[in-house]
Image 1 (cartoon, rainbow, N blue to C red):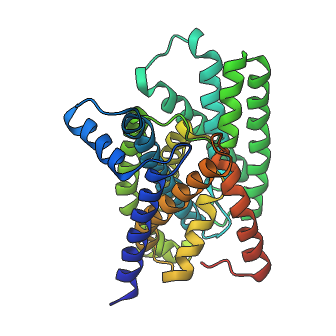
Image 2 (cartoon, rainbow, N blue to C red; image 1 turned 90 degrees about the vertical axis):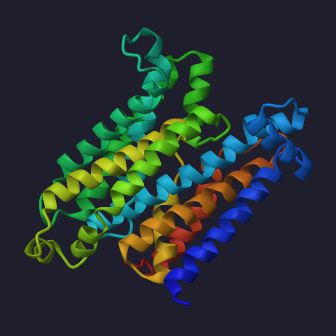
Length: 338
């Protein structure tokens, strides 16, 4: 069997196992009978026990949000690295995550005094606007919309814009009331404790739509890997490609960040692991990034819930603790695959 068929099969099996483990274990360990009762409540509405209701109303939405969020961050990383032909670019490094967190924080603190209200979509819209503004500033100030823009300039500008928006988040935390400040702190550390069916639906819709849109650009991104001049010779509009792929990235990352906070290193590490496993074709990376990203975030959330039971660690701490050593190892060994 070809490697391209074996890899998604293996990742699919690992993802299913990860999901079952995450459904089974946590602050409260559930039996398979209680999980079955929880599914019964979902599909039939029958009255069930407390643990079964915990599974149906809390545990299952959380597990699904982990899978969807991991897919979002991994796909965002794949798109960004392909667009700039550089293996150390990720959404967090170019301001998208901090901008989205700033937009969400602004909504938490000032949402009650703003006239704009889009119902259940208000929070993701605020996060998307923050992510768009931050990322646009990075790309304009670094000149990344020009051909052959410096990747060093992009990253340095990203560091500056990240610092600016993190300062804004700090100011909002300072003026916020205690519940609002606590919510902002959780955003910065990353948390999936607030998962519900509402968030699963919104993040799921944005992720599915952006993945399908991203697949349309995989051929152009593959052509871009040969160089901008070569891509233009075969008909790729570089400026339009950058704008449209950037828009997809901002939406998919910002909406996920609106409900989970800043989860670092997923979008950076997942594409590298996939390249080491099966090559650099962007269609392969995009589709398998959905699976591997879901695995990484699901297992990270399981560790976060199991490490300090009945309390839990913010998931961003877990992904950073795991991601930083991997990043440093790849950097020192020169094994950034592209």
